[in-house]
Length: 226
Image (cartoon, rainbow, N blue to C red; front, side, top):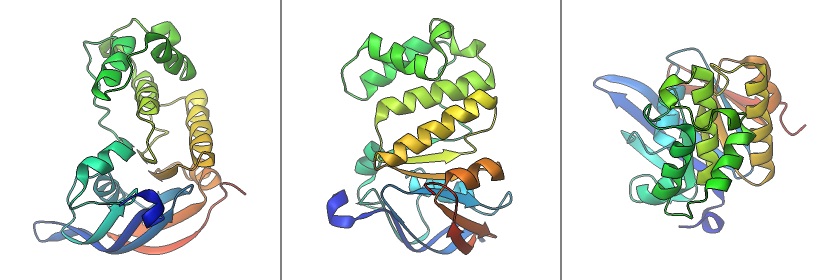
């Protein structure tokens, strides 16, 4: 199934995820159009990360229907993983590689053209051009987050999932994330993010989804795109 045939970036019906006898997420119905930014709002344990992991195809739903970028999460995992990028607390970086080596490796894994100049440009965009030859293991938490952002830009996803994207970043880094999200959505991409930074998230996202005890309790317009 393609994007044009489906028309939705995220389509969930009766979605649930159980761990043992405990339902971390239950009875979730969610429809998100392409070109939309969504803020998942809720306290710790509300089910935000569980939902993001299912959207990223990293966790299999216990029940319900779910398609992401027009592909079924039960039958088309490889297709989803080609269209979705996920930045979470686990950044999946190799401490022994330099920043530029990380970018070049990701280019090879993506089966695209390995272009050192392009990799350097992506690092410059996130403020890491001066750290290109430093090993990732020497990076601060904020620098690692910036490198993960640069790496994700190489993937050219249609759906971008962000779990606490502003954490570990200084003001300039947060502004970088904001500009990137706005540009991504303007280009037709979809962003679903969970964040405790209420002021930035409310201003950035077009749709706010409230989660409590694993269930959606409400939704309303945010300030993004206003």
